[in-house]
Length: 251
Image (cartoon, helix red, strand yellow):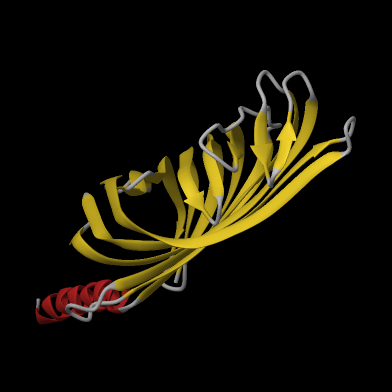
């Protein structure tokens, strides 16, 4: 009887230790492939053009570090590419980089935008059923835009960059003992004439759970909206959205 009680107590200690070890510190590393559909356009004033873009697979990489130190926020960094190109028959004239592109001309456009999110957040709830994070996101946008009208030999390009402070939150709901969960994660800002949002919703399945590493598959939808006015003389109203698939490792 004593041996049974000792074994049970030892088992409880081991389970408790493993659980505490997981909450002492954790590193999350993830990668996503995102089939993004791009719409909207840009110009060097409020009269932005509306371009046609091809569908393209973009990527997103992230790493997060969580710890139990009180009052010290957790840290997450996300790197996302927002690249696309296309050809458009203009339905109206617009100006870009000091050049005039006239109605009924065909232009080729190229968008090369990278965004890096530096997020500081707190875990307000953290259990197998519900977890909720809240924090601040300093989103750094670094982009280059190109327009070419080969018929008239008119071309223009410009670069822009800036740091945009945004509110950040993440809500995750789990189904215990199944490995299944769902989450909604997003950042949002609206001030002056700028409006930016970046959110995603996904279903996850944890197919490997071990002491060394957890591995989780993700399938979901992501939407990024960039509505800026006069950021380094760039005006843009663009939307990137589509489905993604990802893999996350938890050490």
